[in-house]
Image (cartoon, rainbow, N blue to C red; front, side, top):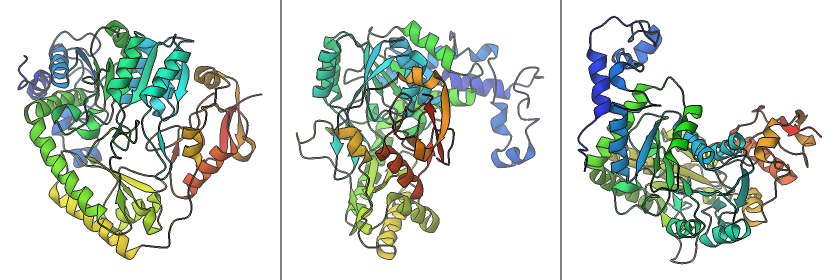
Length: 490
C-alpha cells in the first residue's frame, strides 16, 4: 500500500515555484513577471510562478522517472488500476490513444453509435473500421442509453476478428449499462474492453455509485477528473488493468496526441485531486449524494417537471444503474424546450445547467456544490414552472429514434477515408444523399449526428436545423452557421 497522503508532483511544483532564481527557460512570462496586466488582475500573479516547464525536479510526462511517475502510481492504486497515465489534453486524447493502441488500419472495433466525437477522431487517426451498435433507446424521453450485452455478443459472433470493444459508461445522462456482462462476453474473444468513463471518475469512492469500470472488468478506462472531481479543466487520466493492453503502445500513442509542453498546473491538479479523493472521497461523495437526492426529490414534486429515474428491475438491459449525482429534468411538460428552459434559468434565476436538449436539462451535482446551490436550483425550477409555463410542447424530433432503433447504416467509406477524401462544400439543402466528410454534432453532449463516411439523410438535415432554430449549438463542422456542409466529392 502506498501512502495516499503524499502529493509528490504537487510538492515538487510548490518547491520550484518558491525557489528564488533567474529563469532562462520557457514559458516566456518568466514566472508571471511578463504576464499581461488584465490577466494578472483576473488571476493574480502567484499562479504563474507555478506555470513551469520540465525542470530537473519536475520529471518528464513522456518518460517519467521521478515525481510524475510517483504521482501516477499513487493514482493507479487509488482508482484500482495496474497503470495510470496523466492526460493534459483531456479525455479526448485518452479515447484516441485507446483506439490507436488496439487498432490499426482496417481493423474492426465494436462501439455504440452514441459515442463521443473523440471516438470518431480515434477512428480517423487509426484507420479502424467501426462496427456500430444501436444503444437501447427510450422513445418517450428521447434518450439513448447503453448498448446491451446481447448486442455485443451478436456483433462479436458476426465479427469475431474485431480487435476491441468500446462502450460509454456512464452516458452523459448518468445511465450505466451491464458492463460486467459486456466485459465477460468481450473477454471470451480475448480482446480488450475499452471504456469511455469520462463522467464516472467518482464511482470508485462511494458504494452507492455504479460499479467502477475497472472493477466491472474493463481493461482500459478514460476518466475526466476535471468533470466531476477537483482537477483543473482538461486534466484527465487513462487507466489500464490486466495484460490485454500493451502499455508501451499507450505511451507511444499519447506521445503523438499530447502536447510536448504539458501544463504542470494541470498535472499537479491531478495529483491533488487524487489525494483529496483517496483521503476524503467517501465523505465528500456522501455529502454530494445528499445534495443530489434533495434536488431530485424536490424538483420531482414540481408540477410539470419530472426527473430521470431507474426503470423497474430487469425492464431495461441498457439501463441497470444510475449515477445519482447526475440530474436530468424533463421540462417539456411545461410547454418549453430544454433550450428555452436553459436560457430562462440562466438569465432570470442565475442557474446554469450542464447542457440542454429538446425535452430536457441535465445538471451535474458534484463535490463543489453547496446547499445554497441546491436551494437556488430548486427555487429556479419552481419559478420556471409557475411563471413561464405554456401549452404542452408539440415539437419533437424523431432523429434519435431513427438512429438508435433502426438498422445501423453501413458506412460508404471508412471515417478515415472520408475525412481525407477529396471533398467539396455544398449548400445544406443540396447535401441530401451525399457522403459526409466532417463531424457534425450538437454540443454538448458531443454525440455526432453525422460523421465522415455516413450518408446524409433528410431526417438528419431536418433535425440539425431544428436544433439550431431552437438555440442549440452545432459543432464540429467547418461552417458553424450550418448553411453548408463538407461532402465527399463525387
